Amino acid sequence: MTKCPYCDISNNGDKHEIIIKNDSCTYSLLENQEIRGAGIIVPHIHRESVFDLSEEEWNATYHLLIKVKQYVDQNYSPDGYNIGWNCGDVGGQHIFHAHLHVIPRYSNEKMAGKGIRYLFKNNQIID
Image 1 (cartoon, helix red, strand yellow):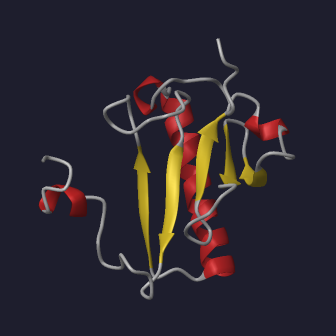
Image 2 (image 1 turned 90 degrees about the horizontal axis):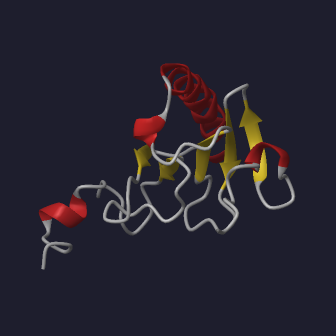
């Protein structure tokens, strides 16, 4: 079994640029950012998907997300956000440790104004 890359994220500062954490989860910037300021919030306890989080972990994630938004707003000045969880293989989850994507969006980017439903609306994933 392959070691989960997110199980020790709160103590693994050499591989992840840890920005903010609380008792239940950690926010880390993505290593290879295609969009400035993009990162993930990861629960400290291994949970395969968002549906496995406890109510306490949900609340901790929410409170950290508010702090993350303040950090990203101050440091990157985005014009919008996409926030989301990928769940299961078909849902695009590649690492089976729940993690919340925090993706700042900018008005000058190529896909500005196109949210996560853009692919569905244009039948790009249905064909």
